[in-house]
Length: 530
Image 1: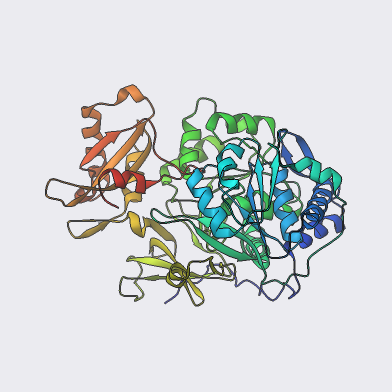
Image 2: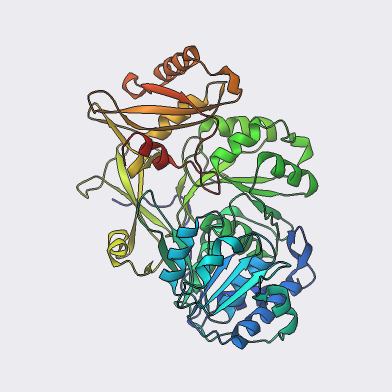
């Protein structure tokens, strides 16, 4: 039996989008027609940019792409930090019918080599800082015809600002339809090559119409900031789609977010809506630089990426007087489809289905599970990706007709709230019983000395899997065997005894993604468990 959303059924969002549709044209024209040409849309280190200025840059960049000979459905790779050039390139591509392929700016040269070949990109726009990672690859990419560099030194290629300045602000929009490919987002799991999730023009509008508007409730006078970068599905909605859909503004920080850097940003700018991931919230609370509640203007805080421990949420509310609304979204679905929100909030859970999405939990045999039993999460909704590019096997295993298989394990409680048990790959089977690493990590995080924790499966002397905890302490010099035993006893007192970590290893830091999501697969690999 599928899990229904807890709110009123959403109106038909797909039916509200016309067949002939271009997201970039729609989002820009709606704001200009609403008289927002002079209102700020983005604030970055170069200054404040208005909706009118953005529309002009998008039109110019689109004209520049056509002048270069770029044609519809050809691919443009975007390797840029957050800043005005990113939405200029992304929306400029979409408006011209060219497929935008944003890249994670923290990947390796090998990753970029694969993406250049897999996407068959005709054009690459890359920041001056990232150019060295692409320099050797440019001559090896047989499909690549144009390189555009954002920055002062173009390294002998075309300079982004020069293209913008020379181009005409041509009012051109490609005759795309709602189901035309618009952009790809590369996603990768613990093994294998990255997978290009293919999204269509309608999907961006749908994520706002289902979640950004009715659930987040953003307003024109909001100022947003997202720890997740624009090249992530989460960050794309947070920092561009949702704010622009209501005429709000966003602060873009090109640097990798740190607690100290974000603390300075919140003191400098009156951010009202804040998006982050659990590990960042935890690190921010532990930072001496973190502002007090009276120093910020926050009114709404969102978390996604992995389960938010209840203890972090409680400490955040104590300091800032606000709940953190935990949620779940995936690259394959583009943004959030399970969420806590005002009037439907339960700490320690991911929330309930966003209206417009349908969920079901299945056991290993594909049968629905009962409330209180763990099952794998499947989601059905209109913002699903079409496929993984050039990967039929993975596409067929993930996109099952109307349903998308997430790989996440969940339990539905008696009131319909969903409790995360982690990724299917992260689950441990100890003494024949499943153990959720998130449950053990959440118990560890309630100890006063623990800043971060990651729990993975580890082989004991008999080659049996048992939990091992990797712990980052608030005070590094506190690490000792006695504290390790104390943490084990702490977990035993909170959970069933078989769930306690058999080993506790102290680390200075944990491996993470660019958004701060813990990469447990790297820790598992150390224990020879893939």
